[in-house]
Image (cartoon, rainbow, N blue to C red; front, top):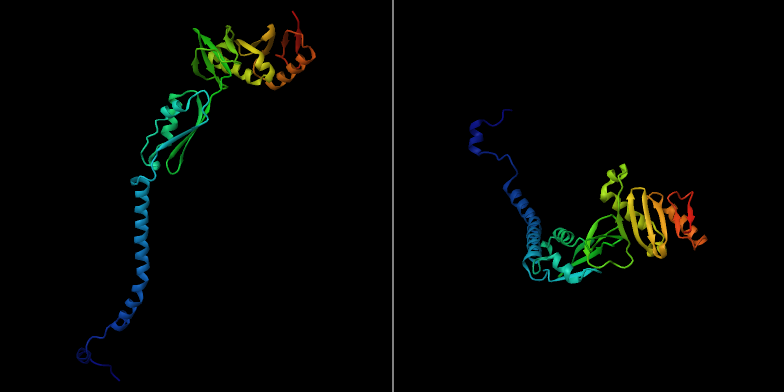
Length: 265
């Protein structure tokens, strides 16, 4: 049996190929409520983000108003605050902590380490660690403090108590030329840090002639030939034993700790 002719199909109208209109309207009604939570969520996130930005940068609630300093000893709190130059009354989040650290290190060489942090809601905290003078170099009536790394970090007019003087008298040996004044100074300070505490307290000066020729002058006219900073722990133990065994001696040689020598004038 033949199907409907073209004319018959035209008379009946075009048959739609998709789903019927009634189904489409139902599907739209079904989808519409599902979109609303997404829109509401997007608007809420946008508002929260804008509020957070305003709170951090635009409001007066989270602004730098105070600078707290801890760890200052020789330096005063005001010296640290002034050198830090913290931009007060600016948003806390905009304070450049790295720049503050750089200013402190550059302007106050006595500072070995500094921790800069934000203490919300209004305070910038500065925790400083000062360099400790292990020795001093006297020049022109002034005293240059030297730390454990051999760094000359400060000049003072009065000799600090309990800090030995470095007497730099380098010879013409190859080691002296190789290490130079800075290297010899570092080696001398290395020796200071190796000394037994009691010997360190009694040390008046260190005479440095070369890398492996460092001599200590103690109170009471006593001297110690130490050599270089190598094998420092063994030398310290040997020296302690010698001083205990012969307390009246005035010269100790521990440059070779396995073969020490003791003498009296």
